[in-house]
Amino acid sequence: MLNAIKKKIEYYTSQAAVWPEQDYELIEHRDAGLFKGKVLNAGCGWRQINHLIDGELTNQDISWPGDTRTHVDVYSPIHEIPNPDGHYDCIICIAVLEHVENPEEVVPEFYRVLKPGGIAVVSVPFLQPEHKCPTDFQRYTKDGLKRLFTHHGFEVLKAKPLFNVFHTFHWQAHIWLNMRNSFKYRLMRLIILPTLVILARRSKLQSEKLASVIQVVVRKPL
Image 1 (cartoon, rainbow, N blue to C red):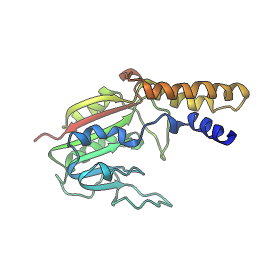
Image 2 (image 1 turned 90 degrees about the vertical axis):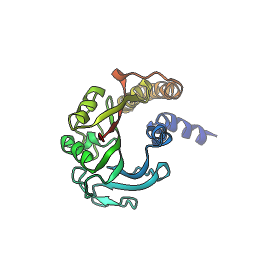
Image 3 (image 1 turned 45 degrees about the horizontal axis):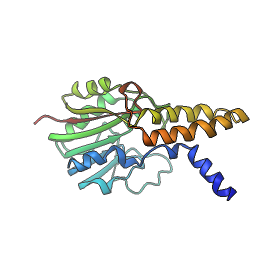
């Protein structure tokens, strides 16, 4: 009994409790039929999205020492994708550009490898704490992300915040409340973090000014 209670407390004071499944960012676009034909998962990391793709998926990423991933199909820098011009129908790039030193080189490469009329779905953090993997260079507002793509010839079809404000608050509070382990901080963790989990799961409140993530859907003109 005590062990079960302890596990529940550990779960509801962890980051895992507040974040939905990774598919959340992509289900809407799968249902809209965007993930057909040849699809590139650019900077795939550990994310496996085969079950969302109604076409031929290529997982691309850089390699690192001790890399044990088996789902990566292509190892390359993200600004040097080893495919011919106009190869892909769709590019998915989730939580990658913040870790890239040269996004102004990455976006033209996306443009190059997309077919005319091809779609890219790109998500980046806005109000998220620094998270190195192994580096973390920048954050984008909605206007900043739109400008990054339009500057390189893309048409913006959609731009919006993802997750509600309580996801944003939870991550920041989680870091703050784990900076110390005094009784006061442990008590605040027990009260504040589970409360934010409940609010994050129930609230539909979204704000560009307090967004955890910004997502754009862009198209290469015909």
